[in-house]
Length: 267
Picture 1: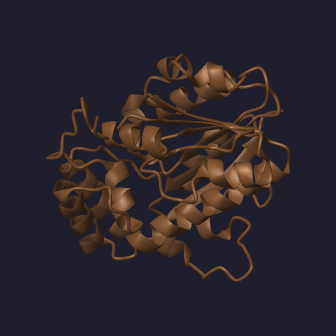
Picture 2: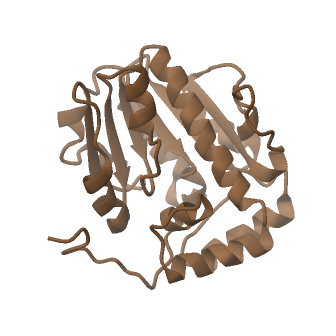
């Protein structure tokens, strides 16, 4: 059977995961995705740089958590597999790490099943789920067979929550997920903000809405609410490129990433 057999690809509908793949220079995107991404680049030419900055933060934060002892990761809204993936970073540090990826795009599903293989001592699984149904996500077949929610889990919601507007209950959804995790768990978030490039961000929100994806940029206090009750790791909630940058990394201005990042731990 082929990679996409039995999958409804909806090739004529842009998807944020495939647009992100395009921004990163990937090849798992289609004409509708590229057209929508082109509109995004027209209003915010820095979007490619921002996507790479977000990806770099994922690598850094995963490594920090794995080095701190985390061996279970749940990555929601994982997107198209682009190496190095989260499980590659985590299992390089901790070969026994168990990683579950979750996304709602059928193309991501197909590629994840084919390409996301972990170390012999660890486990890597993919579940089809949507963050707007947190109970369904946590009950998805394969999730609890791979990770033990009674033990600490690092929950990644990178570049995801700005696609969940307030009317869909973004903060309530995150609280549901947080409440299901054991003490000592971590929450990892990157989120677009209007604070650094308000005109460009307003244009991007319109582009995504025109492509059929609702989006909402949030201010720093609004993003900070997602971490309520948890303890932020240093340096706190900061512009994405400024969260523990790796020496020698290209310097990216906050306006070129236009988002905040943080990692917090459940008491």
